[in-house]
Amino acid sequence: MAFSSLIRSTAAASPLLQASARSDLSPSPSHRFKVSSIGFGGNLNSFFGAAVSTKSSSLQKCNSRSIQPIKATATEIPPTIARSRSSGKTKVGINGFGRIGRLVLRVAIARDDFGVVAVNDPFIDANYMAYMFKYDSTHGGFKGTIRVVDDSTLEINGKQIQVVNKRDPAEIPWGDYGAEFVVESSGVFTTLAKASAHSKGGAKKVVISAPSADAPMFVVGVNEKTYKPSMDIVSNASCTTNCLAPLAKVVHEEFGIIEGLMTTVHATTATQKPVDGPSMKDWRGGRGAGQNIIPSSTGAAKKSASYEDVKAVIKYAAAGPLNGILGYTEEDVVSNDFVGDSRSSIFDAKAGIGLSDSFMKLVSWHRDEQTQECCICLNDGVLT
Image (cartoon, rainbow, N blue to C red; front, side, top):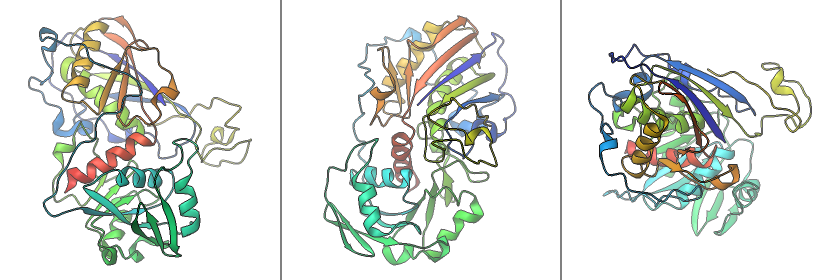
């Protein structure tokens, strides 16, 4: 997946404007194939939280620094961030074993600071869970071992995971399995009221894998430092937001974004129709996915800057403060070059264009599923 954004700047310095509605920055929860545009304007404080400051940024005057060449390949995966816990592993439960739930489990298995102890999905039994986890047409087969112990237990890489089939999250006995955190990846329980049902089963914290209408939303590398321990339910926003936010943060802190327009080109997803079919909420969304490009609606700088200036500050951030989250490449890459890349946003320097010192187009790549699951797992570390 890739997105491009148009940003407009003015040389006049001014205080940050009032926060724009958060919904303007969050794509629709419906993950149809889409070419969608998101407009955003005013202050990005509601989007970035305390990560955006009206004072001098850590990236300012980076042009005067010695910016060393960095290796920037599309398929380069940053090293695993070691996170230690004095109290041992954090135990995690997953609600919803769809695309996101399965990839969260894959990422969790590769981590040594927390582990998944239970998975709930009312529509998938243990045998089918094992099959769906073992084989993946996009990310390839699971390289470890997996077997079905019984109807309520999977064993992955020698570690047992309990299988639950409850429709009501309040009935899932997370506490019995020791699950402190729950990744809510069903796509259904995305509000504070609905997600709070997990606490009735013993969950202490819930991370929603989709945008939420009322839960605090965090993007790793952008505003996770504004998290407070009193926040028991948070959202990891959307895959598109995780791609846009790091890039916009860098440009906003250095040049100041006043307004912008973002376009996302989304690959086909499971909610689409292979041939024309009924789609009551979005008639165009019901058209054949393989035959059409389907438009779908969803839901920027204060000082002059050349495109080279913007490239330089993004390159500096990718090698420094946002290393592992924001990437930078000047290679002639295409979409398949990013399979398995865990970074939230990889800026494509060759794909963008500077129309003037105050209006330019930025292009950045991200993996729709893999990236957000890595950020969800990073959020688990942030929330502890």
